[in-house]
Length: 239
Ligand code: ADP
Ligand code: MG
Image 1 (tube, rainbow, N blue to C red):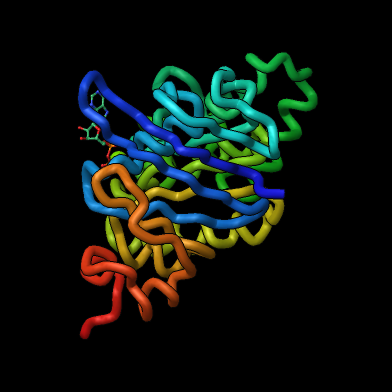
Image 2 (image 1 turned 60 degrees about the vertical axis):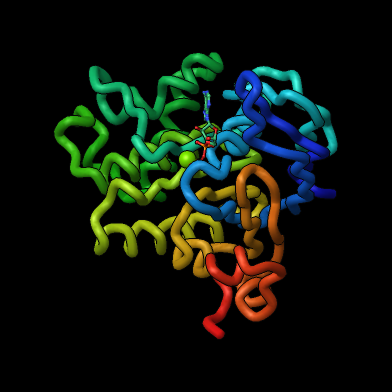
């Protein structure tokens, strides 16, 4: 069964159509990268899957269940943002525990989940710190750790590396690949405009152009057999 199905999804902002008839079947545990130039609709598509943006037309199914009109918290989806989106007045621990408290988990269970995520991301030493006392790379680890504590069935990343310097970008990319290997049942959808990130992380790449899907395929398929000039220009092999 596909974990995430988009069926003829459209999105309008006022009179402006930004997502046009997107249909996709994403498999359980698959690492799918949405790639395309700035403004092509990657974030909007991700935010619709997260429930942060209403779907104008079409349907979204997760594990076969229609969640088109459900609230974000009911979807079993966690999202990591480019800007980290940590609460500045809370410690790392409190940031990671907050969503679990909202979900009314018991204190010992919260402590256990936070400890496990902190171990996975190697941020155990940072739990008492405030976000301002962390480097950009550490903040991103905390944001990923916080998303993990929720045991999501779908993990969404919106350009998580774009605020990091080049060295840290490579390191964090490897970390995310490791996470994917570890959370084998968790479907991951990762948005980037970076071709290298897409090629190295993806099981399958979805190339977006002006709100529609240009091509879907494994990285090497797209590289060797781009279906259009656009795809060739974006990730195809030089000819
Ligand atoms: P990407 O993430 O690929 O850079 P976005 O999904 O952010 O692209 O944006 C796609 C298009 O939708 C852009 O033209 C953008 O200006 C427009 N857009 C995004 N969010 C809004 C909004 N809240 N209101 C109006 N237009 C928006
Ligand atoms: Mg974006």
